[in-house]
Structures are given as structure tokens and as C-alpha cells.
Amino acid sequence: MPDTFTCSLVTPTGAVYETQATAAVIPADDGQLGILAHHAPLLVQLGYGTLTTTPPTTPDNPNPTPYTHAVLGGFAQFKDGKLAVLADEALATTDIDQAEAKEALATANATIAVGDPAADQKATAVRRARALVAAAS
Image (cartoon, rainbow, N blue to C red; front, side, top):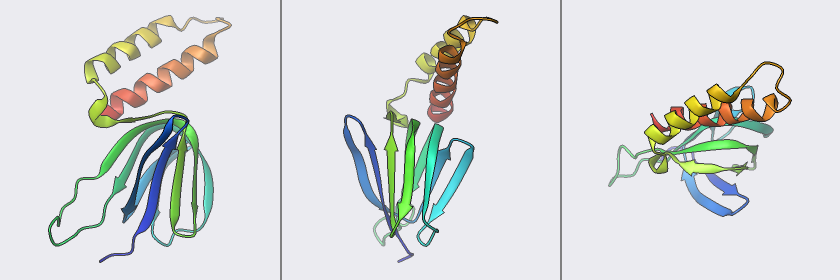
């Protein structure tokens, strides 16, 4: 069996999952970051994107399906063979309606106006909607 590590995804409302993994790709604020079992310790701010966790293969399941979640902000820490993803919000990609996500993105894009005092909040809404559309695809 390949080297594995424990991966947990937690939101303010509670634990989403905890599993063994052979690899994970996390949406860091400055880009995607790949994690393997013997990665150096790290602490990173999360952006908006898709968290993908690859479970180990087994004789009964030689090609396991990765877990995928849209992660919307937070932090991740890898230390002592454990990846803890503390997300502000996380949605299983299977729970995202692609049509609704695309509609939310169109609405968010339409609300941004030059000189608007709430432009930062609206830009965050656009980033969130883009992440959901990408995760649902």
C-alpha cells in the first residue's frame, strides 16, 4: 500500500469528513498546492476552489474515486502526517447545481460597478460563484 496521510475537512458547522489519502490538492490563496504523505510541514491560507483528496487503492477498489469539495476560504495545515483543512465553507461537488452556480455567477458579475463602495464584497461573491461553477463542472 502506498504511503498515506490523514486528511480532515472541517467547517464552522462541524466535521465534513476524515479519511486516509495518498494525495490531496488544496486551493491555496495563491494557487493550487499538491500534498503527498511526506510533505514538509506547512500552514497556508485557502482561496476559493476545489479540494481533491485521493484515497488509497485497495484490492477491492483498485481505482478509488477522489473526494471533491468546493472550499471557500479558510486555512490548511500539514503536520505530522495529517492534513487539516479548516474551511469557512465547503460543499461536496455532487451537491452543487451547475445551473444555479452559473446563474449566481452571472448575477454577481452584473452587480459590480466602478466606484461602488461595496465592490470588494461583490468581487468576493464573484470569486465564490466562479469556484462553485468550476467545482460543479
